[in-house]
Length: 534
Image (tube, rainbow, N blue to C red):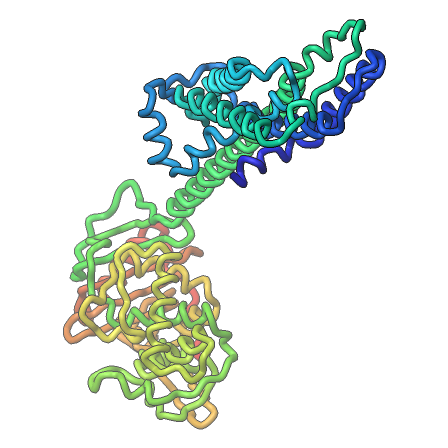
């Protein structure tokens, strides 16, 4: 019932204004006709007007949802069944509400008007009001039309009339208490004669006017929301399309383009790629997407990840993590407590392929990523590998899975020649990595250790059998008899990357020279300068 009485709120003010105007005009007619209007009549009329305003606002306001198309599927014209269903769906309270809201009308109408003290008139009035409401609700999809509601309205009107009769039987003079006393010989104006009908119509008027205004405002708001949602959806769709187009463009840009034709070269390597950095073009490929053992060429990816989070001048100290390398692994002769800059440790990792330096760098970087200098080695290494995986996604690596920072083989660790080209290309953009990978030797000046390392890459050693003029790096890799090499050279003013995997020794160097000679043969130049020794 709280919702029923609360429905009057939007219509209360305009209802009061209409009622006051109506009563003022009627009072003028009363005075002109020399009629006596008891206070009880005014009080009773105000109560009746308020009750009608509540009934109409809760039942026929267009603000409840109005449609020009009748909602016949919402009707229930089977007697009794509609009541049973109403009780099942809304409880017994709904049943009482169906007739209680007509009891005041059945009581007040005969109380206020002598001419309406016929039970037939009272029931006709209540039934007509209920019928109007049910017919109007046919155009309100949110409402359920029930024939039983008219029957309950008649019952409520009868109960109200019955209560008025009981009151008259027990209290003398009640039937005259609220009736208007008319003067003999004077004609009663039509508004006075139709006072009861007018109060019904006038209380319906503000509900219709205000309800229509509210419904129009609601529809406009719904349309505005729909337009806003449609606009937002269109903008979201456009943004999604632009993001997808950008993603596809970036993915396309990251793809390695291939030359229209490739030479038929004879290489020992199981997988190989020759790539022109300046032309962004694969010039030769052999099983470039096959999964292979990356070995220590993994350290190029380790170096990129480290420098993604650390400055080369930062200081770190090697801890117990350097003891995790295998017994046969190459090392940089570091000890627990060795302190130096990130760049010095990078030199110790890339030049002699120090696995101990790789673990020290990965642990330090992992703790920095976590923001926790006290993190365990396992936690730090996992954070580092996760960051390395994210970097792999940025580089568009298509067939790689790095599980150790040093490249020591583990189950499930692999890469491919194409991915190593992508990694090497990124390394050449980094001055620190490019400088270290191109150095024939490197002096590791740690705070408490002074070591000199020789580069394991024979292509950049002038005294070696496989020296190649123009070579500028980059990294070797070995796992038992499986050898690999990521090499780079500057030939005729252009930079080239050669990746050899699943190769042997010295086959990897021979294969690299074959690939670079193919480029030099096309350009007629093998390069002039060699990298300065550090």
